[in-house]
Image 1 (cartoon, rainbow, N blue to C red):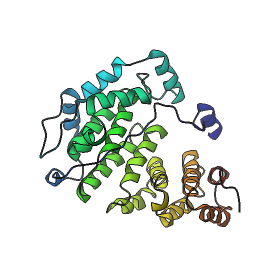
Image 2: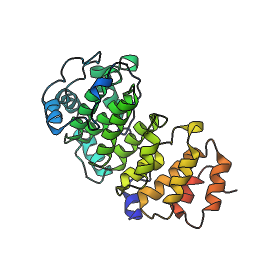
Image 3: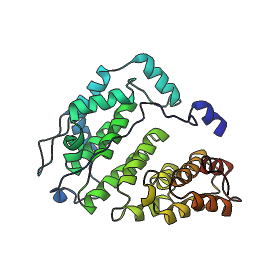
Image 4: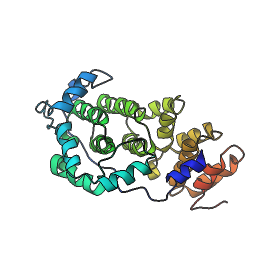
Length: 292
């Protein structure tokens, strides 16, 4: 399997430009909207894809309709790039052929940027419903845009954060592949410090779904010195024996990222667990630091 995946391009050092991330912040006054654990029924998703979301709710801004987002992406389609992008993803998804810089420009035009980025200001319920509606769309750029929206949102309460996490949990398990899963892991990483998120990762690391386990392992990759190293090492050790490519790769990637701030700690972990770690995990973990 691993040789096939290498040929598919997964092991390339640089990810394609159309796989990107966004940033954002938040706004207060939306707790009342988050009474249910799951937000965004199928009816809500269908309605969002047909029309623009209803006006601002309790101070939240209006997000553009999914139809508008999809049409703007389609207007910038490139059939040649679409074919290349589909091939890179092993022809699992359809593409418009819109690469990340163009997608970011489109998002900026219709959703703003910085402090005025609409997903940052919108109620969590609207953000979740829009993301789920985008996930239902046929073209992969719509799922990438959903990731941008979720990553740009800043929930203002524990309830809102867990609602966002519920949405991520659903999306990780639908139309799953490393491009969206890794972006969604960054959403988790942004809120790793929030109440209830770490406990949820303790559940995901033992999930039957392989992609949820991958998210639990790599979600701290950009947290630097704020990394919960005990959890990281525990998660890696729990699945050190796993020969699944995407898990072994995730362990190596997570350890390599943490080595930027704890070189000796990672070297010691690899040395102490060398007999159970997969060769791929060891190679990736020590890629820039070497052995002790």
